[in-house]
Image (cartoon, rainbow, N blue to C red):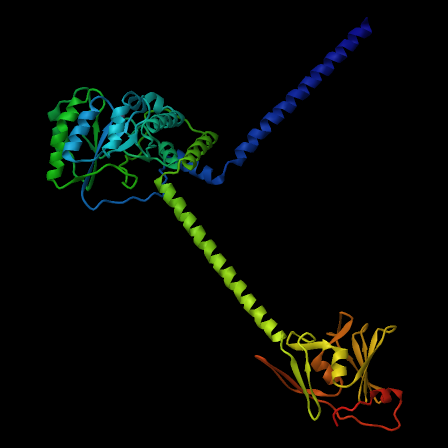
Length: 488
Ligand SMILES: [Zn+2]
């Protein structure tokens, strides 16, 4: 019984110990990937993140075009509504183009108005889905989701994914550097305004008040003026003809916003929303926005991609042309070489005969003529014997005997049977069972010399002087073998 209890205790201890081990291991495993992920953050992203957290706006690489004419961009937010058609009628009558920053929610409720905006040639911007500040500005993710949702609605009705956006309430005290940066990364252009008509200061702002506000607003080369065509903005519709006429008289032209118009943006001020951002969170949002930009290349991106593609193609074409030129050069060189190789080599022996060495027999290598030893000696009227046992060729020419020792790559020269010299002939080689030797060195070994060599164009001539042959009556067998009627 006692033993059983002890065994039970031991077992319990073992189990507890195992549990501790499992816990420690799981803690370690759980901790390690988190640590790894943190250190994996791209240093460039960390740098950007740091700057944004310090409240710095990071410059985008977009370029804009300033119109020649002073221009008014009429903008209408919060629609479309049942008022939108009235606005469109006025714009049509005045022959003026404008921009509508629509809410996804409203677009869904008024698809025909949205269609007419596009049909009439006005621009559409994205003003988020529901305009609820608390949702939009508590977290960029929610803002982003609403932009996407609204865009999907707009796209489903008119097939457009607007690049132009406007933050509900404007960016001041709503956007921070993260919002601006992430929207830009996704390819959007955020427009605030530089003239506020004051038509949404409160409900039912009187026409005259709006008119006075517009008239009192400063003039600029480009004016982005804020109006609303949402429900309850009848005053805005009523004041519109007056406003258009006012700017026309001042010499302004009217245009819809495009991706080329530099957006009016408020400077960053302290947000009235409490938000927090961590590096992993920022990285995740950056991934989302950049993925969106890749999946939806906008006009600017398309132009950039096209330009990059054009440059890449140009580079490729240049490389190809270079490779082609090189190939042609090589082919030409090979052709010349082949042509040259096809020429027979004419050999003149001074005071002796002239013979041709067939192109298939000799070759030019490293500026020297190489040819089979046997061929050369025999052409000169000599004789070559191959001693297989010693791997030596004996060439007999006149009073000269030469032993070409292939193993040692040397030539032993005999004059009248007496060894007179040893030459090293490093270039000596065995090809197709033939001993290949350089012409000049061989002639030198034979006691002669090349007096002239012409290797230009189709003229291949070598002139050589050979020592006169001496005839000795008391000659030995070698000499007997060497007696050839050559030269003098
Ligand atoms: Zn709004």
